[in-house]
Each structure stands twice: as structure tokens, then as C-alpha cells.
Image 1: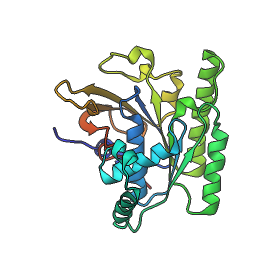
Image 2: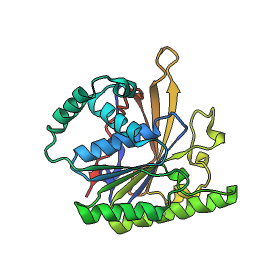
Image 3: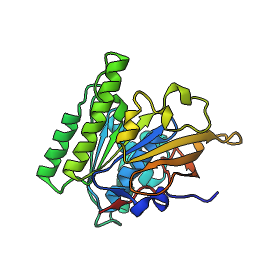
Image 4: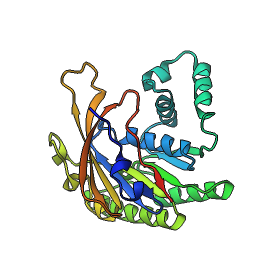
Length: 262
């Protein structure tokens, strides 16, 4: 099956500065894998990226980035007895991109991190070096602690607005995954109504993508998926569109991700 890229369906060819993009999917459907691909892709393309992980340990996130660069399963990266050889391979690949940008990675505490802390970290980076162009946040739903369902909805709405304003003020593109709700379990084609916790996230977003995956029944490797990608909302123009691509989540390689738009 022919592989497609998101950017071929995007108005203006990519993700504009000041925008908020949300990638919705169930656990294991490739949200974080896509986000990791975006971080590597944008960095190699010359943009400065800040990647905030609220879910995974920083060592895992680094291993996944190396997996993407070397096209190797993450488990092989982690278990490799010769880490020095892997580092040499990474350096060889990076040397082919002399104009690459920086990739700053942060491990933040799930349900203990506030948008203000994200803002401060980005401002610190901007003061020390080239300004940040892209912020990848993994992920929106687990920022601040929630004490009840109603409080969680209010917090998510508040956090989404703050993140959107932050992207606009500091001039970066913000990309973050979000979970589907329980109603999406077993549903072949989820839509925006299946976003977890609070629907307001979809209203505040500029780009809203939905991942729907099918496990190949003939495959002995359940990491190999067919991912149906729906660009359900695009505030910058373009109609709703859906396309399918093949993905091997064990390697972490997705498809050609978003370019940046100046």
C-alpha cells in the first residue's frame, strides 16, 4: 500500500507557528510514536525543538529517538551490549544534517506539571540559545492533578487555553496527543466526540488529527499496523480528509510528518 504523508494534505504545507495541534488515539495506536517522529523530523529539518515527556522516562524517550534515526526496534536499542557503536551510528547520521536544529528533552512529573512550568522551561531555553520553534508535549491529558471529574474537565480546558496562548505569544508550534474516551473502544472510526475528558480541547485546537488502527490478522507482529489518519479539523483551510498508511511501531518509524511553515 502506498504510504502517504500528513503534509501532503495540509493547507499551506505544514504546521504554522502559534498553532495547537492535537493527535487523538487510544493507548498503543501510535500517538507518542508520531510525536517522537515529529521531534526528530523537525530537529533534523533545522528547527529547535523542546520535547516534554510526562509519561515515559527520559531514557525511554531517548531510546525511541535513536530507534527512529537508526531504523531499529527500541527493544534492540535498550538491550544492545555495545552502546558506543550505537552512538557512533547516530553521530554518523547527524553529520549528514549540518543545518539541523536542537532537540531538548525534559522529563516532567505526570499530574504534577503546570502550563506555567512548561512556559518557564521554554523561556529559559530561549534566553540561553536559539528560540524554540516546536514544542512537543506528551501529553495534554496528564498535566495537572484532577480531584474530581468536573475539576478535571475545567483543568483540561484551562490548560488547553493556556498552551494555545503560550504558542501564540512565544511563536512556536505546539503538538500534543490526547486520549480517546471509553466510547471509542471497539469503534472502527472514532470522531471528535470521542476525545477524552473535555470536548473543549477540539474547539481550542487549530489542527485535530485522529488515529484509528487495525491489527493485521495475518501478521505475527502486532506492532505492524494499518493506521487510518483523519485530519478532522484544519483551521487553516482544507476539508476533512482520511488516508491510510502502514506503520511498524516496534521501530518507531511512522510516515513523513509535518513540515514547519514560517
